[in-house]
Image (cartoon, rainbow, N blue to C red; front, side, top):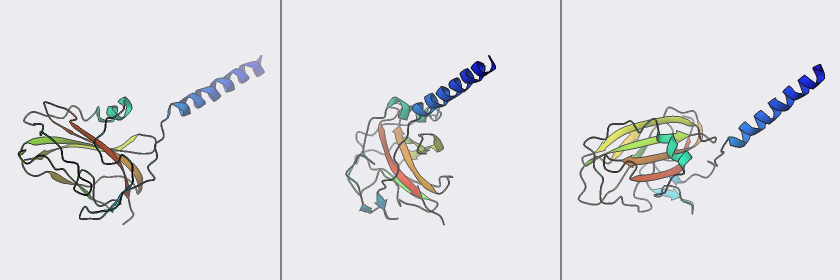
Length: 178
């Protein structure tokens, strides 16, 4: 009876661990765009990094703790401009301690919006997040993510009261040792 109880216990533990491992989602953060400090793309990949995208429910859930950010007084631009080498990605990449994000909108936009920013590890677990109000012709921000040296994935959205998450993008980043 003691052996049977032990066997059942081991069986239960084994399959519980296996189930938890199967629920984990691994992401590949090894492929990085190389971007110099002034924002010039040195090398890019033919992938969907740093482009407008739709997030999966799991990716969208990364922003749940940031979705309480006050959006009163924000507005949605008519369009977000996507031109390779002109913004919507952090620079430099890789970075030592700080990188910059800047965005371009149609010429008539001068309102405010909120940047929601989440860095995740290879298990899609957040390691750093922030929400910051931008705009009034200041369409960029310096960010100093408090993360260990390594490779990560950055997810971000631009949000307004009328359209939470009107622009969504992601890409792989790397923090280097100083």
